[in-house]
Image 1 (cartoon, helix red, strand yellow):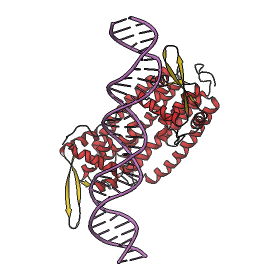
Image 2 (cartoon, rainbow over the protein chains, first blue to last red):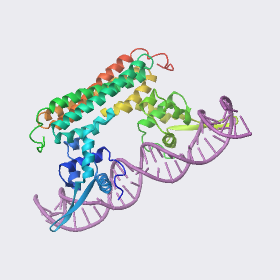
Image 3 (cartoon, protein in one colour):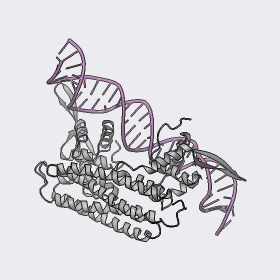
Image 4 (cartoon, protein in one colour):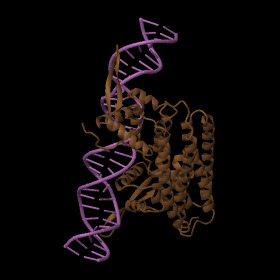
Amino acid sequence: MSPMVKLPLTIEHALLGLLYRRPLHGYQLHQELTEAHDLGLVWRLKEAQLYRLLGRLEEEGYMEATSEAQGTRPPRKVLSLTPTGEAAFLAWVRAPVHRGRELRLEFLAKLYFARQLGGETVRNLIEAQRQELQEALDDLTRQADRLRQTRIYDWLVLEFRIGQMRAMLAWLETCATALAFPPSPSGRGSG
Amino acid sequence: MSPMVKLPLTIEHALLGLLYRRPLHGYQLHQELTEAHDLGLVWRLKEAQLYRLLGRLEEEGYMEATSEAQGTRPPRKVLSLTPTGEAAFLAWVRAPVHRGRELRLEFLAKLYFARQLGGETVRNLIEAQRQELQEALDDLTRQADRLRQTRIYDWLVLEFRIGQMRAMLAWLETCATALAFPPSPSGRGSG
DNA sequence: TAAGCCTACTCATTCAGTGAGTACCCGCCT
DNA sequence: AGGCGGGTACTCACTGAATGAGTAGGCTTA
């Protein structure tokens, strides 16, 4: 009813991403997110929370459900993306994050899905993220230089952030290298 | 009324820490936390949230208020720590955090207060934190080694965390060095 | 026949956090 | 004289996240 009132956030986008590959029903989604690998390694959702999100995403026009009767069993509610949902997901997955601290969850999720869209997408994402981080790092470095002699604590706080960012940049290089070669035949094609 | 039902968390402890130095009233607390340096660089609180926390901390016996009338003006409510509050703060400030991601806010806050308790406290805190991190790092490294060939994405996720931790360890060394010498005469003594 | 899992929710509640508002006093600027 | 800003101390209503527990029926396997 209230279509697209607000853009979905990280978790919601990842839900869209799971449906981009193929339609799933709620329980399957839940399972993917409670496993100890892939996306389940990055974040988890309790059932209640999942259904709340799913309800909202459907209500806002990003996904739609079709009830799939199967013999005597209770019917399954299969969710699939609408064109709007697909567009939202694709835009999200290609955009870098803006704060360093968003790498830990959001970027990791983007990377997961980008891999399924092929090497080109992965390379672009990594490069875009590298630039974002580099800018933020330069900015922080400039600030830190000003504080070095005067405010030791403030300087240490900035140094902490700088160290984290440097490590992220180095890790992006690792990603680029590790994913440069066909990322294992276990991926469901589309590489 | 309901004394010490639950332990305060990070933010609450930092509030205790500010009062450990000297009693303050709510408005002063708020100002310390909206400035762009020191603790205000690490986290902020809106007024409403601050008073909510303060109310709870008082109710649970960590701090107490004395109303300080001053002439024609409305009285100020000066907050100070109870022995319980002081003990809670001191225990908190000396304990390292257990998850890497808690360095970003909580450990930084601990470090801020530890500096005011003297070089000994700072050194101990840094060393304890170093050990915690090192253990977690070894653990992650072992896990990552197992995944390297089989699950490239899972491996990258762990590599990300490993990189962050290594950077934190390096940063702890920086702290140790930078704070080894009297941390500037601007500190209010006690160092 | 019971355990457990597939499937899909709902409900009540707790907790954090926010924007806005209320009150009153003081001193300064216009 | 009047208003603005800022010190001082809150309160209120609301949104939104998140969780634990509960409900419901069917199927499979030990």
